[in-house]
Length: 426
Image (cartoon, rainbow, N blue to C red; front, side, top):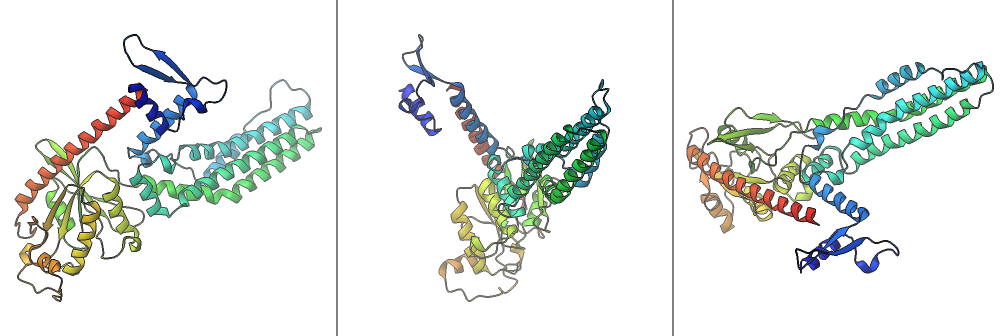
């Protein structure tokens, strides 16, 4: 039974069956263990490597923080000036007495050095910027929201194309210079080679400048700790989410900025009974189809979709926010239906305004909307930050919610560790 289970797991990874192995290659060795009545199998190096790569990609996708590891990108002008200076300091090989040979040796070496000083940094960048497929889904969504679909890969592709062009031109002219027969010819070919290399670099330098901007934008992204329970406040615009973040936070919340919006997102921390939690605001959601949402609304959907958060959904039945109760209800139902598997707490904000202010519109014939207008969602907690109504109970309920979220995170972590142990046994 154990052998059958292990073989089925191999097939999930695309290893294939014994009958499809290449002739002459023993990829799977069968050995009976003395201490067990079952059989165990050992993958050969090639198949084990594929399995390790798969597991490595899975592990990368389960963590965030890749943007903070992005290398610093030098501006194109700095790369060129540094390369020119270093390559001119390259001397010919010692012991060459013939002037022509010494000059062509120096010319070839300087062109080779210039080529490497220009191309090696570009290789470093393309190799050390993360591949989208290796990123956590939340970070992948941030790249798309910031730059648009495909732009990130396009910039890296242009930088790599420039590297290949520099390498090709450099090798070509270094080879030509190395075949010079006179000192003057070697000098001329060195000058010509430098000119061609520098022209090629200048022609493609905009790709490097674009990469500088990409790196700056990604490194500025706020970092989310997946291992700390996070409370995410969701709702329509201006319903009071930011005010709730402030009263729930143990200290002053930090204003986090994203490159694709000028609006800051509040993120604070809650410290209770020696436990530490995160609490964050999210951009308000308008009543429209998900495909029609702007990037800042899509940030909210990305948080809900990909981060292990608990939801505090905020409702403003006074309509002081500027969004009608009917529209708030439609948006709420859509989000609750889509993300109802999250731990959830409904809060009616600005409850001190209810009964004091006439609604903006009261033409709702829908019974569900009418009931929502009067009572809000079932079990919703009524709170007023200004009058401090319900604040104490809110903090207690939030602590219970985040404690439950912590239990979910620990259970998920234990499950991943069990899976890794099972994979390592294979």
